[in-house]
Image (tube, rainbow, N blue to C red):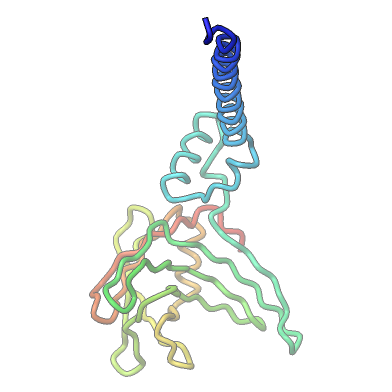
Length: 209
């Protein structure tokens, strides 16, 4: 009988623990729901990088929604003026795939195909974010370009005036430009130092030049 006054206190503590457990579960469910809503929000989705796989899924979704993906521009344009007042206009297409090289250029290299008009003169060049092209002026270096499903065509290439190894210029740029205007894609085969010949594909459909 001496312990009877303590029973209400023990019963109170038992209900307190049950109530605390219920509140904890409610808090966990609320946090989980808020996290799901944040992940589904448009702002959260738009912040996700557009990887190669993500871009492929995006294009497939556009096709299913009736969007003419072939009408979407594959070119980035610029129209600037240098410090001497000369207008510089460019159109650049980024390669569909990343190039993989060995040390010291490992980690992926991105290729860019650019058409440039400066001071009334048009030139055309290929640049990579990492790597070294093989091109010089004394042995008539060449590359091959395939336009759509046609046969590859050989064109001369030249190094940059400052001998930068990550860029080459195309000869016969007007002949290449004429073909690009009619093409949807091109594949450029060019040789890299210690890496051999690589084939780089570009979407060139819809050029406005």
